[in-house]
Image 1 (cartoon, rainbow over the protein chains, first blue to last red):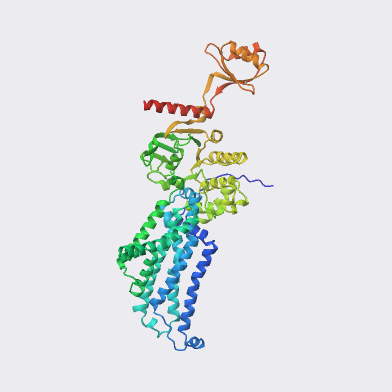
Image 2 (cartoon, each protein chain N blue to C red):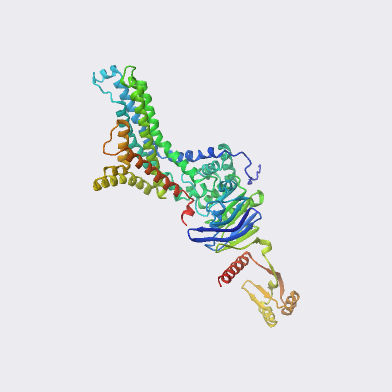
Length: 293
Length: 312
């Protein structure tokens, strides 16, 4: 029987540059998140809306199908801006479901099982690890918002006939509407990405982290509404994440605001939220034994 | 020497944890000893670059911890004291992950992960999530992850924590093998003096944030040539009576072990004379040698004494 001595030897191979190592963080984080059936189901559900919109656009741009469905000459064409707005409004709710399912798993289990001690004993800085986690949740959100928006725009280009309003006003209306939708999608991605990151960094208990996500999103909205009404300063409604995103979407895509929120107030609130959530998460990313000092 | 400390002071807020610590740690495997709250864990965190010194300098493998902590962590492996794993990942995937974080290419990280798990003796369990493994196997995974990138310095914080006697023996042999076979240095932090004695050739005792003792264990184990450890066969009562008659300080236990301290006027030959007189056989005869426990306790006492003197 062959006998082989198992012994420890130093690693003598090549090392990857630092920027390559960075990608291991989102890759392994996403793999952990992807295995959760709820997240997978919600991501699948997130693509369902695109399928429905594709069917709708195909029907309204195909007279034969319209006749077959008994829709006759009814004008069912929605403006590109309105289409993007309603699409992203629903997508942001699906994104909320995804962050409730996957968000708490981003950092809470690592805090609970002291994983940061072994992760930070590697040549990885806090900033790199933070960026890796942002990329992980950001790519999930991007799949639901930016990618879906782009796919919807591609579908619009494909199914709208040459003489349609969409094609006729392509550079004057359609492309600007798409770009506005992308800005709105990026806002949803940033806020809905940073909220679960901060919530999961706040506690080692994943269920509590889910509660914190709900509290931040809906609590801030309720608080903003109450403050705005009590102090009679409508701008304060921008403190709430839901009204902020809803009004920003309307302002970007329709050029109007549902309430009296100024673009400056919305921009200020957005960057303040991103800064606060990012700063809080970054501060919490430490080897846990140091945390306990 | 792989660690140099120069007047190292570390504070958490207003609390000074390490104060003016100066030492050089050398040898293959060094044991870090000290009572609870002495500053061992803080020293480890400082060496890893987790904590910045408030004053003084610490150099690990020639690199200043304040200047380039990432370069230090590239060459250092750390096994934490408490449970530490990435929930949901199997042992092999966890090792691959930390290997890639250390800069190993994908394939090399996977190969090293398997090699290290073979080294620590983890079989098919390596494909199970780490949280489902026994405590002993979790300790093995922690050791394997600290080795995966081939560090030149390995820092082990209580490696035998929560292990049964068999698992403890296996872990100690693994640690000793790492220190002896490879070119790596090992710093082992433990409360169990036997573990330190088994694995380490040097010891550094810390007390109240200062180095109380630092040296090679074999050199620290002083022989006391006025005190002898004896074991006799025969009438021990008669022997002890003869010893007492000569006015020697003597103590014994139920197992027949006797410790005799001779006055300056007598020497070792006197013991044989007394044995002949009492008609007993001497089965064991040796100078008293300090144990690691003696060394540790003496270092603590001296450290307390010098601290008290400094206070007055």
